[in-house]
Image (cartoon, rainbow, N blue to C red):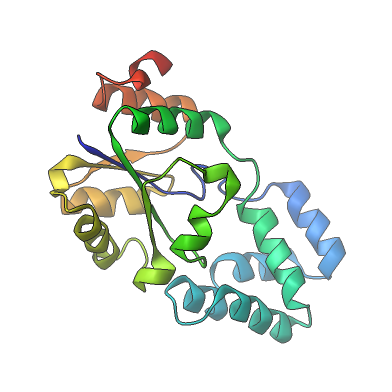
Length: 206
């Protein structure tokens, strides 16, 4: 397998907020958990920004206006939800395998542009490139975003390993012919990747 492609949220950052998050942000905003969950994953603004129909800032401002909350507060809520608990161990392993010649990319559903993701300090050196749903205007599990990835890589499906924390996205990748790894824990994912890349340093991280 020549190419390693990883999701970001739920793989390099925590997948979903803990109970303390909901309590903290409910106290700060006055919003209940159901409303915050919708803002983070199901609101019309979130969905529009995820496929590039509006910017993240515009989405946070619109959601905030609808809920009576400042846009900057809505952004802070989302960043606390999705950009916490960075997986330094995985990042270190991925940087190492990339240095050994494996092409490493990301395929992510996000409100951010590819340039914004690449500029995050904690992700420095992890990815050669990023395919963002915001820029591609299609989101996983849509086949269109996987095709955009393959076009960027110039790769055949059988040469790509795809890692995601959502099984539906992994199954969509497998249906197209990619090798899918369902991320459930760092130990489990690294063990599966070691078996797929036996001649790399991943084999020593089992």
